Image (tube, rainbow, N blue to C red):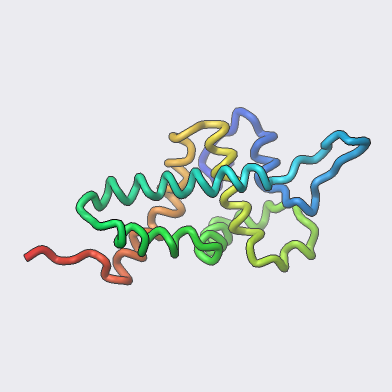
Length: 152
C-alpha cells in the first residue's frame, strides 16, 4: 500500500494483484489462492485508457501518431517491468522462483495492481499511482525522442 499509494478497502485485491499464477491454488474445485491474471487483463486496459487520457490532456494539439509514439513504448513489457522494479514491487511478488524467469512477470504485476486499484478506488486510485510511476516515463519519452514540434 505504501508503494502503490493507496489504502485498499479490499486487501484481498492487493494480495491477488501480487500473486502470480504459479501460486494459484484450487482444492476440491474451490479457489483458495486467486492469481492475478484477471486483474492483469483489466489493468492492461485501465493503463491504456488512463495513459491515453493523460496524453490527450497534456498534449491536446498533437496528432494520433504522436500519441502512438509515446504509448507503444510506455505500454511495453520492458517499460512496465522497469517501473515495477524501480518501485520495489518485485520484493512483494508471490511466485515460484521459476516464474521469475518469465520476461513479463513484473509487467504483469504492475498491470494487475492497476486492475486492483480500479476495482478498489476507481479512477482516483489509478491516477494517483500512474502519476507517480508511468506518466513521468511518458514525459521522458516525449523529451528524449524530441516528439514535440516547435511552433513557428
